[in-house]
Length: 501
Image (tube, rainbow, N blue to C red; front, side, top):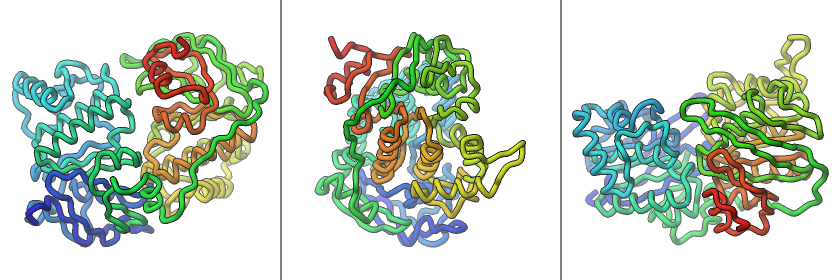
């Protein structure tokens, strides 16, 4: 046990209808960056929740520093030296950096002392933060710094990171990796969960792979290709999406002079946005988080009706139509936040299918809901998009993040939209599921739809988009053919520069 920090032995956790973890055993070494890989629903989240004291195992044991470890709650885990940075940030926009960090501490020091510690620790690890800045004014990368510094102030022995780069720019990813390597050199162990396999290969020296709740392999990811890792995760050969150029039809979506004032104290204004998307085309819109992506989707979907400018489908202005009316004519959207925005957490999958598909799937007549048809629609989505769930009666919040994402995207695609707008369509999903979602978007475009894919994943946009534009501070760049763009061009566009120049 001298070189082992945490030992997992025979961990098993079952829920009604599913065994989330089945006799999982592996070790995490001291000063090791250890990857935890698996498809959506493979059991990763349940496993780290047991380590962090959010879930108790049915059977099996944990050993930390050679002693029995059975945290009854996260507070106990933190007291033992286990810290966690979650995929979804738990921060208050209206509070400062220091105030947010104090909220997460058991016995925070005086404000002046805490501010000094935040400054010292953040600078020492290359993640500089101003303790007095409001969190609502921070970028996504800076918000993640707050979460990390809050953990580092606890002097953790084990740091768990869940999809830490999903909202970061390439430069912020490099900074994060430098910090994690420094922590490793100081003896901190890191359990790293990500679906970005090239990152795993660059950062981690060991990877444990789960499939169906069971450990199926442990390997050195540096000695495997990304495809090898993906195929170990899914247990079969991986078929990536393949974009092929095709003939474009007439303009389906025309946006002209779209402007929107900030919708909150921390919102982003949209400024004179104009673009067109043709039949059979996928337009990729890139941008760092917080540059107007959510506002653009809200305007197109009808969630916000106060925008200036016009939006038209096949020449018909839908700018003043309600969200339901837009859905009726074929303008559909899937927002970034799946739990609470795209899906009602405590409603079943059948109920969530009904909410979105009521009109286009004919699930209601004169106020009478057709629950049998709604259930059949939910079952169709589950089957077509390989959603891992006991059935359509399961609550949305019971699904893993990736499986709920597959359900949300599948629900919109299977309604055969004329226009589909999606934000972060493969956020938090595994490689096989991401390839399937991207292929479904390509197939939808080939059937004649106009598709807008808003994403921070540049590899994703290069894979599926025919043309590309960048959002920066609420302003959209000129549209460029994706085939002629280099990564450097895209980087300039994301930063607000004119790539053509």
